Image (cartoon, rainbow, N blue to C red; front, side):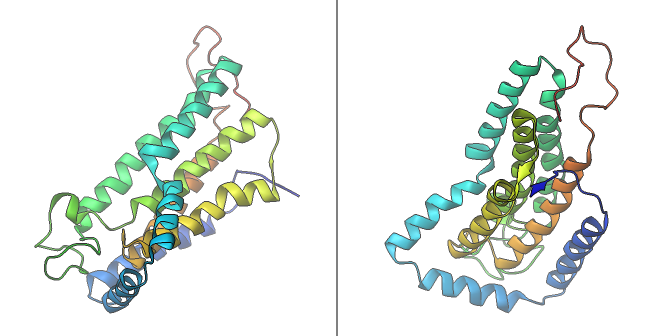
Length: 232
């Protein structure tokens, strides 16, 4: 069984975006904060060293700047070399711009501290006691990155392999990393559990948006042959 990277329905996008809005409103009104705190307290109280370091290693699957962006850039470079088409660069460039214009501003707007914050009212959104890097927990950038960048990686892999992904390849690229990073991010106390849920919902919308783009047929000016198809 093969899986096409291009979504056919808009309903998952609409529901995910609605879910992000709903959970943001719920948190802003002071609900689910006790749940976040209880989960974080349990995680911090149950971190034997082997499990902790295993989780730290696995969590790198969601590191945008250190892992995902370089991997996507390498795949982009290989596809560019093979196809001699500027279109090979478009998914990477679009993902970079899209995450920069959405996830980052959302973190600044919601102004939420992370579980490790030692100041008062650390679970609330719009925290007046936290600032800078201590107030960028919501939504989870780990989860946004893992949804968006693995979508880009899948798009590039399909173009390089010149075929669609099998069920297990799709699972390895699009499902397993999301589950692993979600669990480890919450377990390590990098984000509240609702941060990660919100990150998944927002990341899903962005990833599906990237997967919908017909990269090979976007109108481009003549670039001495470099505007040819790249196999997407």
